[in-house]
Length: 52
Image (cartoon, rainbow, N blue to C red; front, top):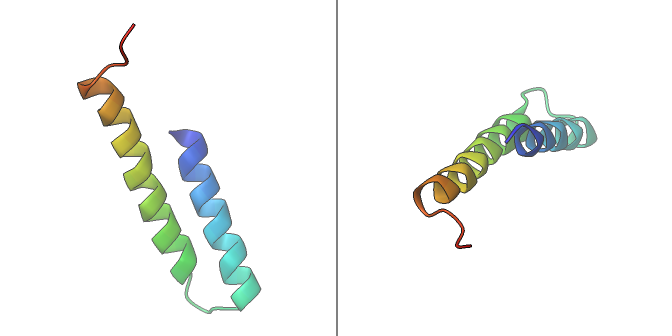
């Protein structure tokens, strides 16, 4: 989970630096999106564990 969220935040920061935005638009969007993806993947494995 931490790796997914870190990559999302880092990617958003780099996109904001590249586009020279005054507000961290991409950082906010990609951080929230990466949190949602990490929670989805964790809950999916918790609710439907992989078959042996």
